[in-house]
Image (cartoon, rainbow, N blue to C red; front, side, top):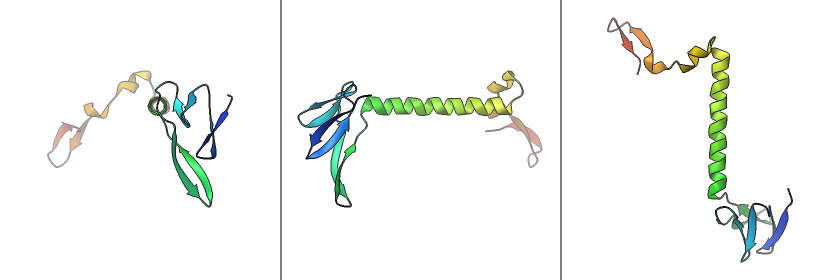
Length: 108
């Protein structure tokens, strides 16, 4: 992955030329054309430019997060259940005995 650099407000800003491009002194995403370089701020007498996530990057991050969550649930099911048939069990269908009402009822 080759990096390119651009001067934005006198500060070197590195970016990936395969995914973004420079126009009018700012960096934009090639897919959704949203601006990636953020505001200028100073910390301990050093100036920095924040990086913004564009729409397509946020969507990709969300998909990865959902995929990791599904994988985590699948791993938990594999560790907990004896049979693959049990993977479909849900607590919505679980009946339990309520001592106060002296009856079985569906959990909610």
